[in-house]
Length: 221
Ligand SMILES: *[C@@H]1O[C@H](CO)[C@@H](O)[C@H](O)[C@H]1NC(C)=O
Ligand SMILES: *[C@@H]1O[C@H](CO)[C@@H](O)[C@H](O)[C@H]1NC(C)=O
Image (cartoon, rainbow, N blue to C red):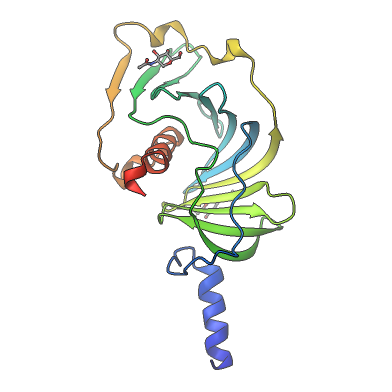
């Protein structure tokens, strides 16, 4: 190839997040599975709407918690159980709660298995291995520590990992949804079995639902 083409290819490869047609080789690195229990603080950017997200992943207990602080805004709790039930609520005087029943459980530790390797790239100042999966997510993992550093959804919704505490577990009482989630009038929603539309990816809880559906439903992969 001419130097110009090599250069162009390099640019396309490393700067176009939508490159997907690169076939994986068996020697390619694979993403480290998630630790069975961890706490991470993430900074999220959804088209300029910023959020701080506390992620408590707890696979042995079949539960996952996203505690979402919107910038100078609402604090929301998205509590997901592996039996498919999610509670999305506030703990302030508004006493809001939505109950979702999904047909899939929480993300498996190996949810990035089978991803397509895209090479190495610096992101947030860390040299990372980069993978994509089902044109849905681009995932960046530190080459040395194997910790996730960053990921980007196809909508542009991005996560920057600020802390990653392997083995940290949130105390049991914190996993209790408030009583108003269990009243008759709590808004319950059955999830449909089709792929959700793009517009549903507006809140972190719907991204959570979407990830779970995409990655935990074998027929979709
Ligand atoms: C958030 O993302 C938007 C693009 O969607 C970008 O213009 C903006 O600079 C980002 N903000 C921060 C704080 O990273
Ligand atoms: C799933 O588990 C949670 C927590 O134990 C419980 O509140 C919920 O009712 C369960 N959902 C179903 C469908 O059994």
